[in-house]
Image 1: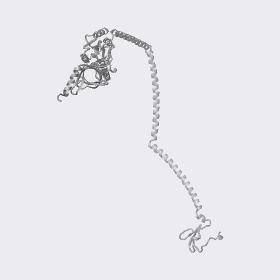
Image 2: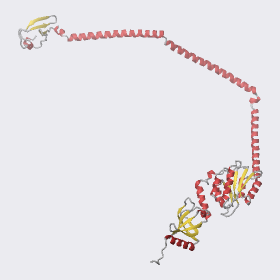
Image 3: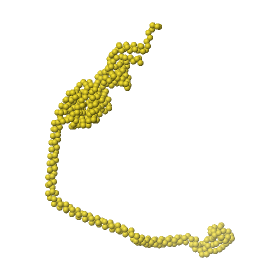
Image 4: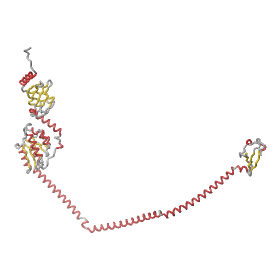
Length: 452
């Protein structure tokens, strides 16, 4: 057992690390980025994978600055670097030195990524783009002072319209320092209120040469400029992020000069044409005013003023007559209303009301007396008729025809049947005239034979 070689974990890992680093000092690897992590340190950790396997990879911050595009999960890339072993975890990984997107170039991918992001933020909105001034007096140009672009722009501006103030802010237009110089120039122009419009641009070149105008810092500086900005980068077929952010894109720097400054002769022709149209309009207005004055001069109010005065005198007399007639009619109306009011007031006088009341009272008294007399006569007539009917129905009338009325004494009850009395009862016989006192001697049934 003593001849068995035993390795510690550290020794074995170090041996493997040395073998891998010596065997694969540099290698190109193609794969898909996944599990991307971007901590605050600036390093990028991700996994390269294909259908069969996966490989851990790291892109340190110093190397990552060279990568123009943003890493994204799912992106197919070509990674160049060397293998390394991370001893703390016993994992091997690819330390990336270069990274390129598969298919499109790195700069093109970076361009598309930045374009999508800034467009989503609204930096390309057409609604915020400002119109160029019609006649700028101060033009600022941010470009290289030694390039052909600045010479072309100055020649065109001087030829089209001289006596303009041109501010040239010299900057580098390519290289790593170019974006910072362009941003600084635009920031300096922001404090110059006399500037009317700014041209930012350069001549043509490759996408690498034009990359300074695809920088996000330059795009935001153009967006925040207080003056209208014209982007004039490269040739007509070249497009940069600055073109989309600027208020106006010119196909070339020369085209920018033509857009920002009108040709002086064209302006003079336009002014001359406007002057001619103004003179013609004024002549027409003068003719119209002259015709109107001539027409007014021929009117009778000016040629025969006395006739107009006579007409107005006649109208004044007619008006005075109508006014007097209206005044009289109004007076009559007021007098009639006053008479009606006086009569109404007189009828409400206390003496008149007392006299009227006395007459009404006398009339009512006469009507009451006549009504009382009539009603008294009617009452006496009804009374006499009632007395006659009572007399007809009175027992005394019956007694006057020979009949009598018998009552028991002392009760006074009328005897209607013989059975009511007994022999010896005292009775009273009422006659038509007077009464007879008697006593019952005999009580018997009625005998029709003795009926009278």
